[in-house]
Amino acid sequence: MISELLGRKEEEVKRDLSIAVAEGLVIPNAYSEEEISKYKFLHDRVQQAAYILLDSNELLTTHYKIGRLLLKTTNPKQEEALFDIVNHLNFSKSLIIDPKERIDLAALNRKAGFKAKSSNAYEAALVYLNTGVSLLPEDAWNNHYELAHGLYAASVEAAFLNKDFSQMEDKLSVVEQSSKELIDKIPSLEIKIQALAAESKLLEAIQEATSVLALLGVNLPKNPGKLDIMKGLIEAKWAIGRKKPQQLLELPEMSDPLKLAAMRILISTTSSAFLAMPSMFPLIVFNLVKLSLNYGNSKYSTYGYATYGLVSCGALGDMQSGNEFGRLALQLMQKYDASELMAKVYFVFYAFIYQWKNPLKDTKQFLLEGYKSGLETGDFEYGGWNAYHYCSYAFFAGEALEITSQNLLAMREQSEKLGVNQVTLLIDVFIPVLKSLSGNITPEESLVSENFTDHLMPVFKTLKYTTAIFERNLMLGMCNYYFRRYDQARRYFDEADPLIESVVGMEYTPQFYFFAALTLIQTADYYPKSFSKKIQIIQW
Image 1 (cartoon, rainbow, N blue to C red):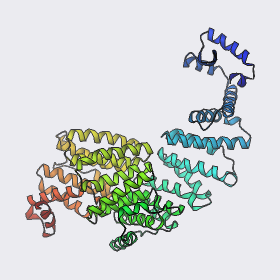
Image 2: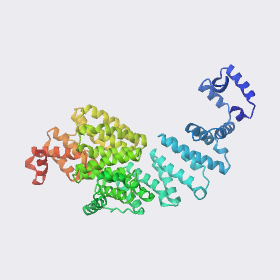
Image 3: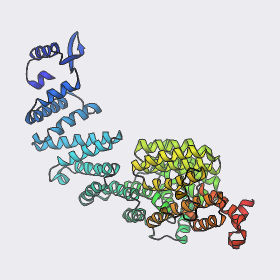
Image 4: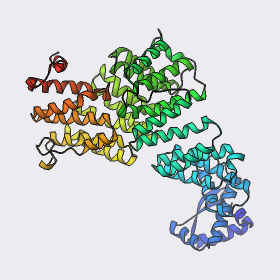
């Protein structure tokens, strides 16, 4: 290779290399038929010194020649070879003037970007994709549409994964303006919805999703009420008919690309709806189920059936049916080998369904698996949800406070790095409570003192983060109950009561009724008859 690169005979190159070997600058690295076939520098610093001796023009030319030679003699389908080729050619791209050669290099950068992203090397992926974009000609969207769209759409996702929302918006605007078909815009718009949620702009995320879904033929009301929910439930049950959950496993496969896109958008919106607009959440679930029943199953149906199981358990009280739909989701996930949805499906099943028929402590191992899957597939949001509930459910299951506190602190650091703001905020609800209960808190930090000022609640209310508002009141109520401040506990439970729908199906619901009922017993003279339900629950 060196002889070809230098344009010299192989014997001459070997003779010169033997001198370098004798000087101790390079050493043999591989042999072929008892001859030296490869060499390497004695030390990285020797290589660096040789590198520095080249002037800028020589560097560019040498990188370009190496890149072209590697492209000619190696297989770019091999990951290591691809990165070597692209790195050399990118370094020397200023020398590349030929339009076809620049297009070819842009395509190689696209491949490298995809490979880097699949290895969770998101920063490198964004660099490759941006380099590819910079190599495109002005008429790329007309004459090289597939390549231009692929590079820009992939860079939208890579920028999102790097939490570079400004660059994401810039690339997204180009995709929206230049895409020929609606279906070509959808993946990038889906990323936009996820980005809004990641920035805690939950209502904006819902609004954006509603607009996109209308283009795809799925119409959701802007402010759903009970009649909308009842209508959606009836339609979903009518679509299911008399079919048992197990029978749905054999539905034909969904093939309509617009319906598949609608499924993805609906899934992208569920967490925002659950956290900020609980009345929208069941409508999203019902539409996921109806699309699967009417157009066939897909890997996205796994999440639809899992969330339908959530609604069955949490809202309808049908634990048996909910568990069957949850099991159906797990089976379908295996059938489609949908590992990228594992974090989502595991979170829904093991945080909302499983614990109604199994010990709460048994959820830990599965939530931990869901967390790891989220990290591996780039689903940081649902990985974070799994991690948070791994800790909070362990607390309710009686785990030692010190262990739960350590896990929460570790998870908080991780969620902050991943940019999962909603998860970080909920962890901030739990940590001071655990510190109070374990006695590791200063008087100034105390949650049960007369001078306590809640700095988190205004943040939650500004964000309209109803789940966080509920959990904050629940945990403060529990903390005050433990410290026998029953009147204050009562006030927190009163604040939480109207928001119980924001945690439908979760362990927080029975915990709320249990501790609110205990508080009622202590302050019975102060409660109206409307709270007798809680008394009945605790007596039962």
